[in-house]
Every structure is written in C-alpha cells, then in structure tokens.
Image (cartoon, rainbow, N blue to C red; front, side, top):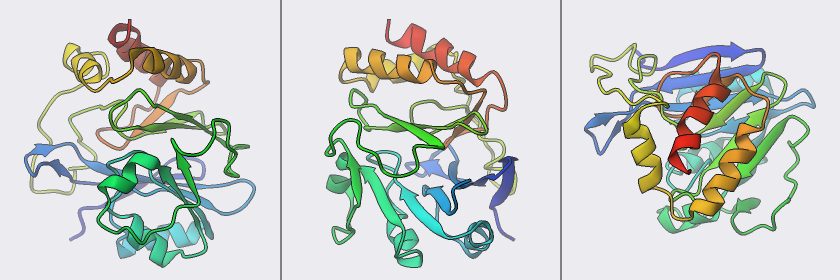
Amino acid sequence: MSDLVVREVAKDVWIFSRPFARFGIFPMGGRSTAIKLQQGGVWVLASTPLTQDTRNKIDELGEVKYIICADAVHHLFLGEFKRAYPNAKLIGVEGAIRNMSDKSLQFDGLWGRDPPGTIYGFEDEIKHCYFSGFRNKDVAFLHTPSRSLIEADLLLNLPANEQYSKSSSSAHGNIKPDSWIHRAIIKNTTIDADAMRRDATTVANWDFDRIIPCHGDVIETHGNEMWRALYNASIN
C-alpha cells in the first residue's frame, strides 16, 4: 500500500505528501507541489520521489515546463524529475550544487547566482523571493491565482498529520508557526538578520491566505497571519 497522499488543495494546485523523518528520527514529512499553469504547462516544486502515482497525476496536468529546487537541501530527487522531463527548465539555488552528489545536472537558473530580478518565465502566475540571509538559502513562492504561499524550510507546521496519515509510524512533534521553539529555530538559522527582515517583509506583504509547507500540514487559511506571527517576533 502506498504511503503517498495526493490532493488538490486549490484549483490546479496539487500536493504530494508522504512520510519523511529528518536524520531518520524526527518525523517532519515531505511534500512536492505541482501547479497547472494558466499559460499552459506544469510547474513542480520537486521535493519527494517521483513515484508512479506522482507521475501519473503530474502527467494528467500537462507538460512539465519547470522543475524547482526550493533551497540548498531539497535537491535529492531533482535528477529523477529531470530524467523524466528532460525538456523542463531546472531552476534552483546556487547553494544546492555544493550539496548534490550528482554534479552532472545542468541548471537553467540559479537563485544566488543570477542577478536579482531575473525572470524565469512563470512570474505572471508565481512570484518568488530568495532568502539570501537564511542558512538553507530558501525561496518562497506565491501562486497568485490561488493565494497560496509555497515554501520548504522557512515555516514548519508540525505534526505532519497528512504526510503520515497512510504510515504505520506516528507524526509526533509539535512545532507551530507562532510557537517559541519555531522562532528560536528561525533565529538559529538566520545568517543575515537585515536580509531576513527584508525578505520576510516582502513575503508578508504578498496577498496569500494558504501556506503549503514542505514539512507539516497545509495551513488552509489565515496563513499570512501565521507568517507574521513567526517572523515579526523572530527577526525583530
């Protein structure tokens, strides 16, 4: 039986949720997100294995045009996505290259290397903000039609109930966006407070209600409030 949960969280926005334990111990959950673009094609934040069930749903949505690596550590499955969709543009962060075992992957764009303001082709529907002051060099994304913020390690919402809902393991742990422990995590992973303050404010000023994290349950509503609760206290 598959432990993958496939769900449409908003029109044309699909998530692929599954168990994942950090260091094999802490159950954070993993999630990829695929968006069917209004202009045609599919944008995929690739953070989990490309299983057959995952590929079947993505292929239903259309031709994959963009494969996205959201930060320096969510790179493990980029190769299998790129091999499956060789014509898609692979866009990630410069910091991921140092961590990748497969050095043969060729990126079409890299946050941290490309000049600020670089246009990758999906900006009519999906905004992006590169967090240079964050240790993992994350990028936050806003899907404007569904008012959904999509991110990897910038905000957690644990326990990862949905991601462990088909697993024999339990989704223990409790890290909410407005908790003191999450604020401590952000402070500990901030390497440039001024840059973090700038970029967190940029995202706070985006119009979103939902947050789709890679780790933990989707925040279906009041997401902007949760973002501000975390970052207003963490970087000030």
